[in-house]
Length: 315
Image 1 (cartoon, rainbow, N blue to C red):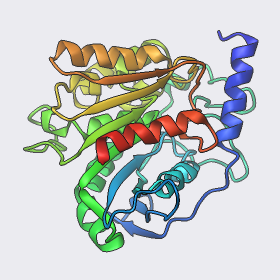
Image 2: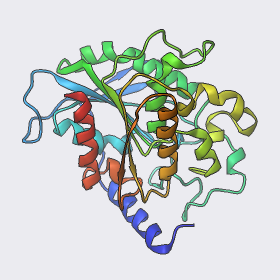
Image 3: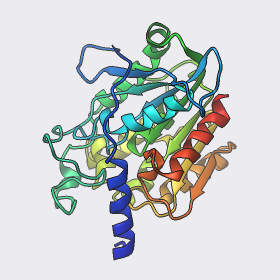
């Protein structure tokens, strides 16, 4: 259990990240018929921190929220706008998640299943609240496949040849997974014949190793829920766990706070170790005295570190 000071700091970081008003996109486009199959686009904003180039790198954002419906893409729109103000074209992807949507006016932390205090219910690990199998994966694959054509029409300023994929927490898992579709098992419906054309992946506090995250009970049993329950976890893990889908041949950086209570740093470290064993280097930037939410909080110094990591791959 975290001590009182650590818990108070984590709560303050979360409050700051969620204090920014949502930012409406410049244009939205559907990649399917379901209401959640939509991508919001943000044009690069002129400003002192944006690069003056005719075409801007495209940053694809996959939001977190433990793959649960109560957390949608709106909570990460201030981060998307922050990247746009630094000169990037941004695509904020929605996808189908599990469980019931958040009750209007209610806002709780990513790792919390229940109400005030955030404790997961005793049977949370047996309740299919996190993700939909296979819909969540269907949507991320479909969105990435449709993205080049949609971006050409929605954001002519975007240079899809310089695409960087990023995601936070559960979205970090999906970003790593989406970049590894060419190394999925041969019978996987989402497998591609060749790597997705990316400059790289920047995964933020990612749930990058499902087995380690399961053992740590990350987000109240979310990992078994994502794969359809405990009895399907081992069977489906080879199709869903980024730590098993290596090497990818795609430049990958993980940014992680050492003080993260929602997705502990051991999860990212395990992925980096798995990459090394597979003969690949995955960069791991560990930020001292940083928790889970500053990585997507425009008011936090950690967010500037994230933007720089993205720029290193994109420009």
